[in-house]
Length: 579
Ligand code: GAP
View 1 (cartoon, rainbow, N blue to C red):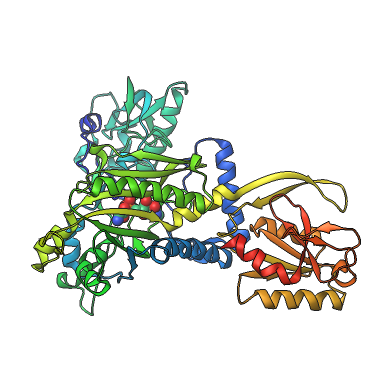
View 2 (view 1 turned 30 degrees about the horizontal axis):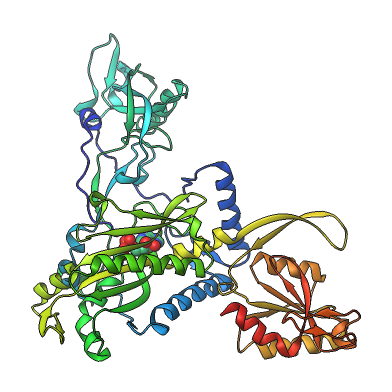
């Protein structure tokens, strides 16, 4: 769901403390808001596998990284491309009512003024007074417990010369001065009260590192469901501040106000402002849609959960224009369509939660929104928003540009602004969901030495798998096997993404391919040369006669079952499985 600014929630407790927000930067870590230790473990394994096997790397890693930006390695890019290609095919190729589009990332600033992004595309942000880490105010989990409020610290009179400013001295205690630096800590139910002092000390130590001081005893007060404290350490959070999420830039040589524009925070707006052009050239009648895949940028306060919340990401969006009054019915149709699509890429229906976004949480232009959420190991989180945007966007752009964007309805001989239903999915989030869904571990017996070992396997739907099949000669020092294997590899290569591997024992080679989710292994063995020794059935169902040559072993990733297939049947067999 698009975020548009929600007015800040008043925080009476923090207001009463009159705490000033220290200035601070963003965290560079990947914070784990993970549900339990198993989930943390699974996520850590997925992140490690992504790096080890070349799916996803941290951007600018050798310079310490850049928070919220990621690079897709050789396998990650194939996975991402398969996902985008399949979406593109489903939206623009097999449907007659949607056309494709590729808008620019940089647009006239007027677009962002008219759409409302410049004024309102913001998040309320809070900052931890201790760590200076920033969080979205609306994402702080409510907590209950006891709040310990510290009025300040006590030091000896000798320390006074170190103090600058009037706010710190008060001669209430004989021979002592008071530093009136207020701070508060929430200790959740069941946690020891002393932990508050520990956190408070960290806070005062940072501020008064040259002083020897005593911590004044705090006052305490029970609280229920408060969102004013950092869930990671209990320290009080500062007041919410509005933070525009668009990344500003300048176009041209002069960094003046006139040159300002933004990296687009959604791909949608280009499709609205080009609605008339696309309609005219494609000669479509309503209902019709425009589909686009492309980068979007948001200066997220707290990028987290691996690629889930990034500052640079890709969206796959359709703006589907419909007759006024038919928006609600198209919203329902798109919900069904999109749920089926996720099943087709390998995310079971049971793992997708459909959230009917309540009116108070919807973007202000929305007349109805469904969020499709996936059960990530770190919680149930949004993959896609399907919104009935009414005619808000076309109205805004028509008014601001002065250019008519109306549709002429031949049937009723009238002009109007269509309504829009928008299924808007995240590429990176869906890639992450595919990885999470596919990741599996099982204990198996090594066929060669009989020892138990853990098999890591990515059970991607074959159409999503980065590599569709791997071709192996059983032995690398048998030129007859190598020649046939290379032949098969070369003949499949122009048609499908395939791999070739000849080093290590065949079991090891299978295992390496399992780990990156390759659904089929093709092994050229002695039976390929000499003929099959026992009667069997081929992968296509046809009987294979004893003594028949030119067959290979086809090994299935998920079941690890092996069967024989004729070399001439390989391509059609694989194509049917991966299309
Ligand atoms: N045009 C509507 C729109 O942009 P949105 O709900 O803000 O709606 C749509 O974004 C999708 O884009 C989300 O469901 C999510 O999959 C993806 N997305 C949004 N912000 C993201 C971020 N910071 N990192 C990764 N994906 C993001």
